[in-house]
Image 1 (tube, one colour):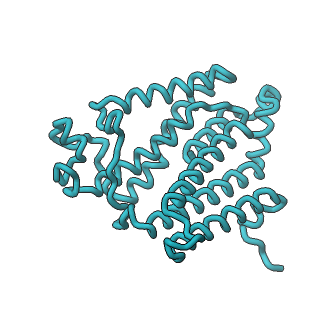
Image 2: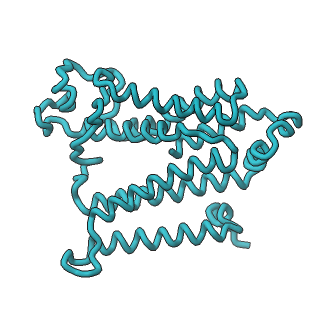
Image 3: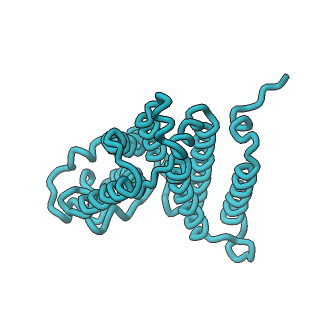
Length: 272
């Protein structure tokens, strides 16, 4: 008997998920094809602006997926997932800034333009390593995971729940925002990180690069959805749903509720 692939097993009895993913796949294919292969003066041409907007929507969909995992299935309303989303974005932006090199306004091969403008003499220690794409990829997932683990461990071990946990997560996001807005933190202050040139050697302004990023974002969304479905369909997922519906009963049955909460919180932070 032919073995089913793990993807079909995860999507088994998930008619809605199959429809949504199939529809998105068709939309991504049509948009990509009409942008790259249809003449710009044709009525069927889809602009690069539309490609970029669709890519942003898919990225926000992945954030929504992460929030649904921790709120919809675990029952924890987190208002701090914007912080995890921003940390991942800043990590990638730091790599893009390091790729500019001497092509910046000030022509400094070691320091980004905003650091030269602020009269910094050397690169801050936490910028080291972000000129390597593999290091960046790891940090984009690891840094939000560490923050989520530390925050979740203390919050859930203290049994902070309900609106109080939501307020604390919002306070964490606001504190990070204030820190990143400070010019002396080395993250660009209010202006952020801008003027990106290329990624992995590909011009960010090229239509083919934008389409490639759109496809990668779609694949990341599919992977995130499959991970969430795998977790929810497992024994761990059934315990998580039970915690949402009757946490005290699950605790009385001997389950380490805090450990399940921390795990789901960390996974959702990585997805965000």
